[in-house]
Length: 129
Image 1 (cartoon, rainbow, N blue to C red):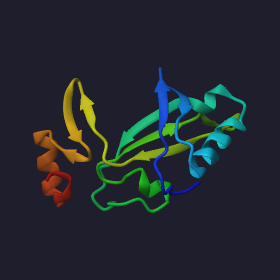
Image 2: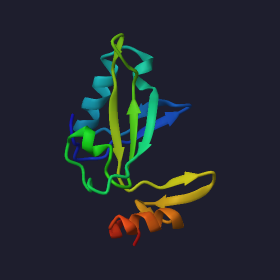
Image 3: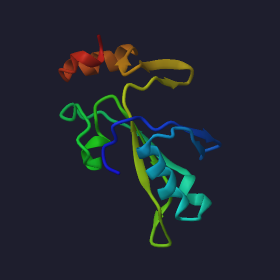
Image 4: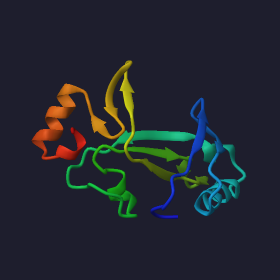
């Protein structure tokens, strides 16, 4: 699909996408892509990472860069192997992130003091105001 124009809402339970809630054209493409594998593993969350590259500030459509967008959360869905070639990645911009019940990022703005300081040192003022 590449860079999407509208967010795609998915419900996740126990590490598995259980429903693609959105129903706009791009969401239907993604829904059909998952379904064509006829494999429940296609819906498994296989990795989650956060973007901390200060040189990447926006989505470009190149996943190698997009998964590093400063302040984003990147989620990998579907096993990636020769037997199960059904992997894709999704980017969440402006996330709220909690670690051990401590809010560290709210709506894409770092609120945890150490991360705020790091973002400031990296010249990422928009991510701390």
